[in-house]
Length: 218
Length: 218
DNA sequence: TGACATGTCAAACGGTTGTTTGAAATAAAA
DNA sequence: TTTTATTTCAAACAACCGTTTGACATGTCA
Image (cartoon, rainbow over all chains, first blue to last red; front, side):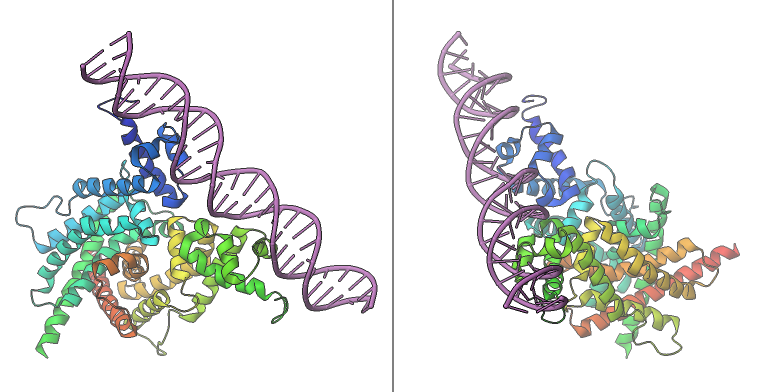
């Protein structure tokens, strides 16, 4: 397996397999034996190619971030001069697509969720490289609703109200399927979900905007 | 330590300590050695009193549910004839209190979050005994906003939009503190948070109600 | 071809895990 | 007190973990 294409196809295979296994069991409970077995590699392969288990893990998380960032950009499907509502809807929809992505990098949601429970250095990398830019962009969009004079606390609160509705479906899936087993999340359902969250949020944002200007008058 | 009050104070001590350790490390990564050491008990105490590690865990989760359910009821502080808005605000506020509770049972949030990542039988117990009744109650309240003719899908979507904004602060704390380190969550901040989420949600609910009746006309 | 770097492999290492064991200690009952 | 049941204890158990080792295979370059 030395020269399949280029050198070290084992390394690539290990990264893909490790993403699955880490997502399934978490960093500590995932075993190098299972990763290597599923990847068709020897037990010593991880130590040879990555040094140790932890180095492999951080490499996996990095990779997952990079690929997901590009696949569904938050401006997906936007026209040239989008309205604030269109921007918000694109942000929500692309976010949902990233969460419900079942592709080979669909492990990203679970990996991040695990970082939320047992943070490692990988979380700081994720925040710096992916979350922070996303958050900044969203708050820009929100400022278009609240007006330039809105205070930062208000913008932050509204931003969290928006993302929370999306993240809910990444963080609470086991709860949702137990409460409402009949719910399915196919492409059409995800579109409707995006519509609902957008409409719900736009109403909340307009209310916040009105309340803020009312507060400024008095 | 046999007869401190009644029999087997060791058993109680083990339950309390185990809740902490399980919350900190999760079921698999928590070690019986650490639990016993912190509880001042012998290594064999868990097997003697509970059979095995897993039986102790399910007992811990059960206990956490029971106590949290009573401490902050979702109708907290409501007058005799509350308005729908008051009901919603009480639901949100009590929910936040449960999440930000730092008391001896403050591990509940982390335990449930861990169940969300690695579900065990304890999650089914939690849904049946705590989550389902809460969800039913919330959907009743929401129906007061949407009207009795609102369809179930709409009520469910709105319900999830509401709870998600609260759960966000249980599931994404590590993210929030990294993004906005300056944010503090003291009693006053929690009240303001409840006000924001309630106002944001009421606006969203009114929008959903208006959209639904508009849809019924055409 | 021969020398050398690169990967692969089975086996073994030391360490940690949950659980078991049988004896010792303690409390309750006779 | 003696007897009996309950609880504690240190030690050991087998199973599993990540990692290391040294031999072996393979591709490259002289």
